Structures are given as C-alpha cells and as structure tokens.
Amino acid sequence: MMKAILQQLSDHLTLSRQDARDVLVQIASGQVNNSQVSAFMTIYLMRNVTLQELEGFRDAMLELCVPVNVDRPVIDVCGTGGDGKNTFNISTLAAFVVAAAGQPVAKHGNYGVSSVSGSSTVLEFLGYRFSNDHDQLQRSLDETNVMFMHAPLFHPAMKNVAPIRKELGVKTFFNMLGPMVNPARPEYQFAGVFSLELARQYAYLYQQTSKRFTIVHDLAGYDEVSLTGGCKVYSQAGEQILQPEALGLTRVQGDQIAGGKSVEESARVFENILKNEGTPAQRQVVIANAALALACARQIPMIEAVAVATEALASGAAGRRFQRFMEINREGR
Image 1 (cartoon, rainbow, N blue to C red):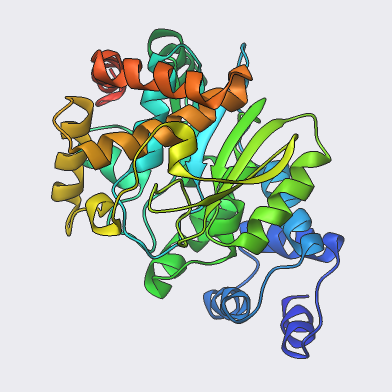
Image 2 (image 1 turned 135 degrees about the vertical axis):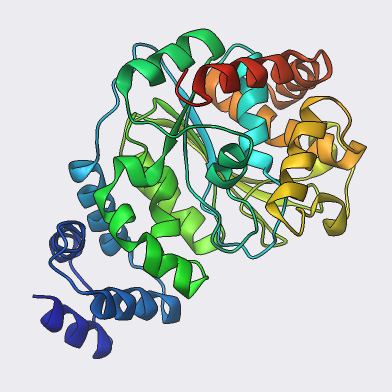
C-alpha cells in the first residue's frame, strides 16, 4: 500500500480521509520501512496537509493511542511546535499557571524538533520520569492539577517515527497533530499552531466537536501568543485579531522571549520564571497564554483571566505546583 500512496502523492494527488487513516495505521504497526516513512513525511514538507488528510491522521492516532481516563474537565495547553522561533517553554509554564489558578490540566508534549527544548526535553532534564501508568498520572492530577503525557508513550506511530523526525530536524505533519491527539481527550483545548492555514483547519475540525477551544497563531509566526504584535484567535465565538493592549499587557521584542542555546539554559529560564525571577517580558508572555487558556475553560473575560493568571504566577502558587509535580513524578515516586 505504501508504494502506491507514495506514487499517488508524487503525482500531486491528495489522500482521502480513509487512506490517510490507513497509512498511519501501517506506519504505527511497523509495516513501513524508514526510507518510505521519511519520503512520506518529506512530501508534507513541500506541500500543505489537506483537511481530509488531517482528519484521517487524527483518526488513526486517537484510535491507536493508549487512552487516559480523567474524572474531571481538563484542558490541554500546548503548541504544535515547528515555528522555528526557539522560544523558551511558554506553553509548559502556562500550564502550571493555569493549574495554580484552579483549572486541571492534561498536558500532551514531546521533545523539541525545531527548538532546543520541547516540553518533554525540559521536564526530563529537570528530573521528570515519563510514565503512562494511569495511577501515577491520576495522582499527579489529584495533587497538582497537572498530568503530563509524553507523546511516544501513548502513540505507537510517534514512537516508531521519533528517530526519523529527529534526523530530519524540521517540523513534520506530526507537529500538526500533537494538540489534536491528546489521549485524555480534554474537554477544553488551548492550542497554538505554526501557520494561519493550520489554525483555520483546527478551528473547522474543532467546530465539529463538543470541545470548547481557543486556537492561536501569532501573526509574527509563533505557535503561541508572543506579545510582539497581533495574534489571530479562533474559538466557538468566531475569530479575531488580539493585540497585547487588549490584554492590558505591553508589547515585547522577539529576542526577549528567546529560549536558551542549550537545554540547561532553557531549564534555568523555566525555573527562574516559576520563582518570579524571570524578566518582565518573559512573565507577561506566560501570563498572556495562561490567560487565554483560562478564558477558554472558564468562559471569563480576557482582562479577568489576565488578573487571575498574574496572581497565580506572582503569588508563587504556580511554582509550588511545579515543585510538588516534580516530587511526585521524579523517579516514579
């Protein structure tokens, strides 16, 4: 089947939803060799994924994933990655701010591809032990309002292609899927995506579900709210361009929210922000993203959500949540 699919794609044809689903199932089951997988992913570096293909890929990933059952409404706070901006771990920090504000978070993450440090990268560096044990995840959610799911442990397809993605070193269609295939199937979703077209596709697909969602694409190219300028926001209420001033926050420069040049530097930035030792720009960007997630889950005005997020970070509550999160999950204890 894979040879036929590659020929079809090389002839500039697209896949049906069913064919997209079937080919990803084949990849996940190990029936496709590495060269074919690499060729398949490379094709999608040269052209956009269609809506039908995205649906099919999503269907396969959710069908094959290790499911996680949660007993409360949770939100995922994540970005697709792949924007090439190498920012610090904004969405991961925002997740702990959201949790500290009282909203449970089921975060889905992975190693960085186009940046030095993805969410899994920084957490592992700081001592987090990845697990797909349900009791461990539930305890983390109960005690800290955060559970973290390292994608390869829950998605066979991601695990099988991880070495190829690492060798390619650029975003692939798997980046597009990350927020859509959270194994906890969260009731609320705050997702940042790396292109405007993908933001529109996400919005369309989420509108077909009962999920409450906020999808953002920063107009400067970031897969999160950067506060460097306007940000396109999609939700059930429609779409808008959100400026930093509308959040009561000031604009920042791109170099002010850059990540470290190494995982160690990124981890230092991460911990400093949770200790309230980050720069004003770093704190504001984390607050902005946390606020949009809170506004999505609680359906509160943006300005109110900013105030709640600011308090959760400034009071040290987010830092304390993170400390407890690491105590529970470090070395499986």
